[in-house]
Image (cartoon, rainbow, N blue to C red; front, side, top):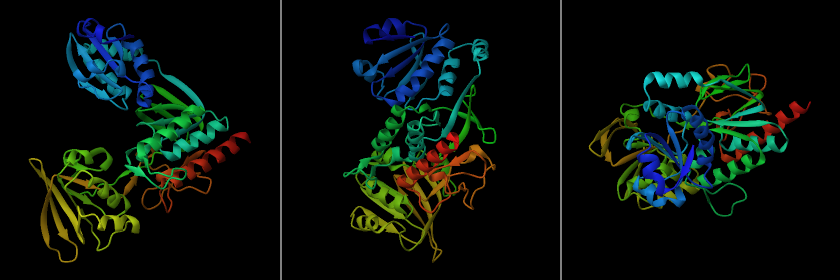
Length: 423
């Protein structure tokens, strides 16, 4: 592996045969997460493919000429031609391997795969999930000198990192951008000493044996496991929804609202998330129409008052979407009035759906006791129905799901584990 500057780019990359190039930056958590993967793959593939690192901040003109606008970004070359995928953000090892293998003959790629040696690592506690609950658990465990590792298929932060503003987290007078609050939490836990394995593929979770496998080659064993995988946006489940996800339908205003400047947007839902995110979308959109299945909103009064006072927001009550179609850049929504049965078709440039969440429990099968909605049941110490397995945050069965309640769950689980390990 070699680090170069823009002056050496032509010789080392364009004339370098098969090359993987990592544009990285300083003070960049995703870059830190990628570094050991990039170095490890350089050891595996280094005889066939050249691995290059470029410090983006000192080579900005080169980066911009290649349409590299974020860190880290990994691009691939074959005899001077840009090939494969442009990978950025939380880059997974499996995506790197897929692009590296594409540069090689199939037989050579198989030979390299066979060189990968299985690895086993052991910890006192595995934290599976890096939202506020998991990060808090990691902080308390490392401060108690418990050897813990935090594993996440994404980068740390959870849903908080995609939330526009957080105004009710104690200790901050001014509302905090969600990604910054997540960053503060993550850095505090990492500096404390909790090990991170993030942006990985979790290929096996064996709760009974306290074992998980990441990236198909590393087996991690522990005495305890904390499940903190959170929840994901719930689908409405009508025709066209999944087909248009990411192509007209979004579930994240922070991610996608900026693409609807001076356009018409429809928001589906009437809870806190729907109403607060609709208000945020009006910073960009010309008009936001909220469709809600009931005759009243379920959001808190403050959010409702703000929405009703916003001249850009209109409401369609007692109505449910029946299906989605896309015609050019316009999304057509078939609707039905739940009281009258009347049907109609609404049109918008984009649709945002906020109708609740579902627990991320697919990795665990049906091994744990859950409530009627699939959330994991625990006792007051956050213990689940399997000995040594704990659940915290939005994945847990409880009445309220907030950042502060997830933090409390993580605290309790960590203290409980610490006391058990000490005894």
